[in-house]
Length: 412
Image (cartoon, rainbow, N blue to C red; front, side, top):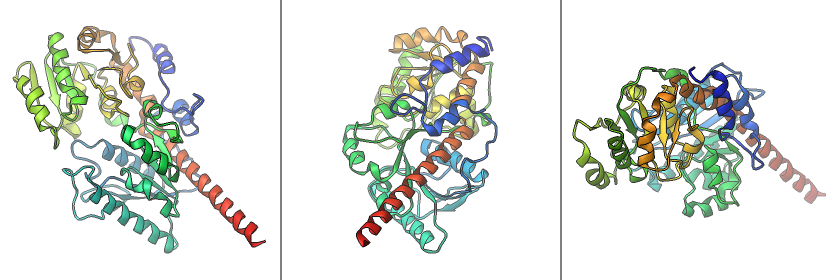
């Protein structure tokens, strides 16, 4: 590496850790992540294979063919858990595929109705009924891992099976009360230190476990083009219009990629589309699979001019896995993922972003990949979740023991 492996190791040590307890130490489920050997297969950390109910959202099939960050997380985690010998049942939208057992409980996927309560509640209620049936039949699940939203957390205490809930969205002010009232019903997992810091003080986050990526499935490309890339949903907070300004200041061609989702049409038509000229600014639409890997690996840099507390930002990890530097505003988890001067740059505005483009020769593509292989590879993330599952089982056993002790005390 041009900066040397020792430089990368020192920079990683300085970077914000992706799993800390309230005192700043590594959370128990993440010490393995920080010190393990990335990319190697590790046996699962449970004393026996677990029966896991993986509860995905009902909106998009797993894995998603295009945009679908949560679906990608669920897919990779499910596949790795199944490969380690756990018995995983994936409750997901119709059209889902997995080496685990798949249960699709609704008639259709609902990609145009993301977040609408009736579909989420219907999906969760049907899944909970099957989880109850499994227990009644003598083949109970050990743990439920919920990625679906809010309904499952609110109703978690009606299940005899303990629940782990990964919080995929930001802690908006309106959600503080919700998690304050219902968060204790599940073991809560944040996906970045930035997300954990934004949690209200009365919400107990048990662990920080990042979203996983099968890094070895992404190509490391050292010879980059000169063009810049922006990839994401066409939302104002994601900053495609700011990326256009920065690219023009840097005198570079910009490629825009990503879907225009329901409710984003006006912003796209007014702030983005007028600048798409097929010369300085290109729009290639939504990309997935190999096409997504090609656009990420071929760009000189990924621009992330976000103006919100994004809880993770998987596209940054995907770009870095391809050896593509990330230039980002220091918002949300970008502060955790981007190591300034090693795998990209953290900048304050569009002008600084353009200046950073002129420094891209300082960044080694191999250093970009190394920075995510150690911290986000699916193997280490799965080990972390196995430890979280064991935490949920221990807590459930402790609660059961206390209930039994109370019954015995009352009987005396």
